[in-house]
Image (cartoon, rainbow, N blue to C red; front, side, top):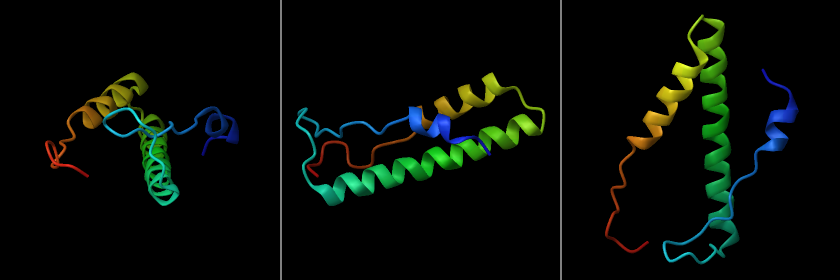
Length: 80
């Protein structure tokens, strides 16, 4: 596990709507931030596991970046 210093350096974004306005619903912001923190912890654990098993850190980070880039938006063109 990592220390709290890396966690305190990372902050969630100010969530925006597609037209650039801030998301104003507190419950939506909470869900978005909770989801992001869960993803952050899972990827942190995956990185730590990979490095402990001898995998190259740069390759793991690149793979995680490609994984995120491969995600598809099933709602493209629809209003939320």
